[in-house]
Every structure is written in structure tokens, then in C-alpha cells.
Image (cartoon, rainbow, N blue to C red; front, side):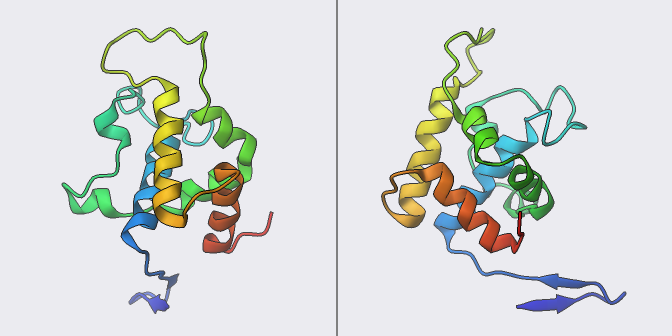
Length: 138
């Protein structure tokens, strides 16, 4: 679907299933904390807590999916997403509320399975789906 605003701007609207929305919002929440994808995010927002990374419907603004943020993830590619999700055994988690990266990969895989079923390479499959969804040719 396409929609226009009063000033003539055209927007492409896509109806998402709840499982797809949860996956996209999880990715967006992950990206907002990445200094390469979102370099202007404040230090306070970069803190990794399980409550912040998990998709939430508590506020209407939490339900919006920002295609601009996700398009920057696409520009960085699958390897960058794998890096954000990878277990980093050398990481020094300084506070108990910080979620270890392994938890992110496990949750990502759960969300992919809920949205699309089992996948041999969930990262690659999500990046292809995201490229098609955003209609970006890289």
C-alpha cells in the first residue's frame, strides 16, 4: 500500500504479522545500540538490558519500525549482524543487567523461527527478507 501526506510525500506501507513485527523491532532495538549503525545514540540508550532489547507494545512509539535504521543494517551486511549477535567470550560485562551477546543470538533465532519456521542460516535469510521488504538493492 502507498499513502501520501498533505505535503505530497509518498510512503509505502506494509502490513506485518505480529511475528514479523517482533523480529523487525528486535533488530531495530539491537541496531540503535550499535555505534556504527546509529552513531548519534546517547550513551544512556546504548546500555544493554533485556527489557530494552525485547520488542514492547507498552507505548505506541515502541510499535513503530524505522526503515531508515534497518536500511543502515542492510548497508553493513550480514557479517555486521552476525557480529552484533555473536558470542564474544572476551567481553567484560560490567553489570548484571547487561545481557550477554549469546542471549541476543538465541532470541534472534527464536524470533526467526516464530516468523518463518526453522532456517539453516537465519541471519542470511533475514537479511534477504529485509532487503525485499525495504526494496533495497545492494
